[in-house]
Length: 572
Ligand code: ATP
Ligand code: MG
Ligand code: MG
Ligand code: MG
Image 1 (cartoon, rainbow, N blue to C red):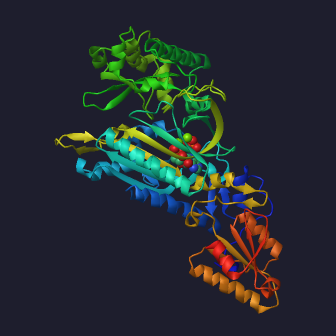
Image 2 (image 1 turned 45 degrees about the horizontal axis):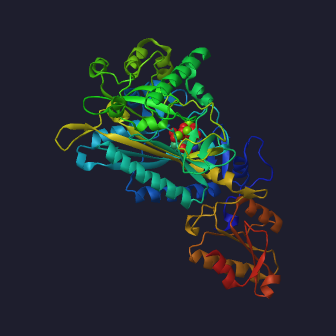
Image 3 (image 1 turned 90 degrees about the vertical axis):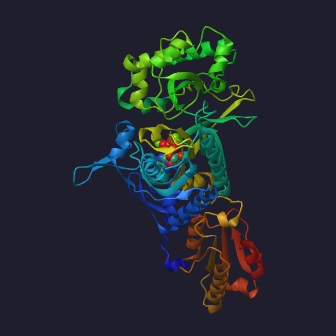
């Protein structure tokens, strides 16, 4: 690319409304322009970066056998009404009407559309498992759009959805996706951690987030300093925020927490399991006759080890705290109880249970008239975690080391959804025995545009952007890998030599920019540093006389005088 024919939209001044270093640099380097709160144009320079990220994400999705689709951003409201999310989703969902007065939404995510597709297209268990993905614009009417493309209202997401005949198959694809995400963020050269999105999320149902570590991150991540343990510390404030309009008075909420904690302690004591002082959730499930799991109750601040304990174990323990009897469960419309973990489902808190049996059946009473249920249901809370006591230096939850807390930027999130959507939308296939089976689902998101801001948060200096150092040069996300700068000269040989080098590198597949703009060298150097071009080659008649080129790496301050062969070897 010749710079004279390319939109260089660099700015000297930092825009007053760009709030963190990445958003400032992205605007100054001419990658993006804001047109309204949370809405950005990707300029040619920025789009090159976005497309490079997309390429890596797409490759890794294809590697795990996901098939690419493209769904409309505009979605009919009926689909969202079927799952109940038209009312539940809250003000982030942009709802609007067409000229015929029909309701639509702008997609913040695509579970409804893809489940509708699966419901229509998939017939037999033989077609499963199957995974679809897309790379596409999402709209979320964020209450506080900020940090540039990091928290935008319209942004690019890779979202994938998998369909399965059973939980075992879902767990396998989930594992493959976890590995694919690890490869993506490794290839991108990011310093990241995969964390449990909810510490209870082990066993049959799970959720992990991928965080790029940076002080500007909006999430707190709790790590163990001596094991692999890592979890998102969800803030108590974010819970009350989610609860939006109908949250109970503060006093009542405290009661719910205290009550939950007491019940947890009770369970833990009876089973002789230590109650860790960290983010914990104990959730009680039942399942229906056909085996589909159903959440019954949740207790706050339990010990995550409890999650793996099955009903038998509790019965074995032979304590007053027993499971609800089959009759009791049946009366509540449920069968067999077990303790496990699920996410993204309504949660119930029974505040009056003295025994687990009461607790389980009580959850249904709660359902009708107590604040506990209202609290949970109106908020459609997906996770409740009381974290107010988690702090640096606490013992770790897995018994190894102490906790450290760091800030993270959520760049990816994978989820085992279970049958929440497939059940609501009647997405079944015929099973091996010919009977209909409700499909199990997983969903997997990556904030493609957010990744770029996160990469810059981790890689910058006072002169501008430094793109991440990727394991291979092919995966570099710099808009251009090499810039060649012909120094103004009366001699035509400078321009000729620079152009010949440019053509040669181009022919070798190098992403090279010839900075032939009519600007002073100082301006060009400043621009190229701001944009973060990894390699800079200066061609001048003085150096040419000695057969040399001046080479500077963006991450090093020293200039090197290299021969033509040496300079080519440096950048290829
Ligand atoms: P956050 O906690 O930051 O609001 P989320 O949990 O709501 O994100 P998901 O529903 O998990 O987001 O969506 C998948 C991915 O999309 C996120 O991991 C994140 O990288 C990205 N993402 C979410 N919201 C935005 C946004 N407003 N702007 C840019 N990227 C976003
Ligand atoms: Mg969000
Ligand atoms: Mg999140
Ligand atoms: Mg998320």
